[in-house]
Image (cartoon, rainbow, N blue to C red; front, side):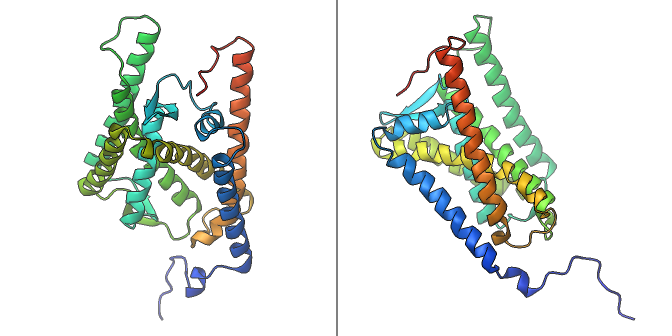
Length: 282
């Protein structure tokens, strides 16, 4: 008697989006596009200021990079982290690892952990310097940027693996988020290109880089927030195609925007109330 496989059955129909999924996909694209256009075309407010205020609750925004006269909406460390987050996600997509369910090989995992620890050490050194306490070296924005980028690699891997293991039915348990040194090298090469673009300090790249930082923040937050409606909708461990994510992703994006607005308003309240220093608004 033929033995039945215990693996989850995935038919060709699993690749076909339902009408409801198509509608939610259109809603997600419309919402994301509307938010982007709203930031770019906001009347009476420059894009530089709009992005700064939109992400005002994320960090102190006291060590921001300025590229071609355009101030980044986050500090150098967080800017590096979210730019590298997008770069890592892009490499994992290009390398066909969207269904990955395993960490990279141990040496690569330790290297990524080491990059995260470097960011933590640099952050501690900066904090000690700002408090007037003895510190190892003088803090610099270039070090903040580079160490933040190292942490962004780990952040992207963790988010991908958590989403896959929590939601995918067809997660590939034998596929690693980064297959080895080659994949990590590709990520670092993209990061190097980003650093080069920042170093050029041209007005042509200031606004696009700032928008990418914003996309990284909102995208990461929406991906995490998406887990809440996904589980509520009973999608845990059932996803086999990207269109199934359109419904929870739309709700996750709404939750992310609501959270960012609440954080920004709370920080402004603290600043205007004298509990924090007044912001340096561009």
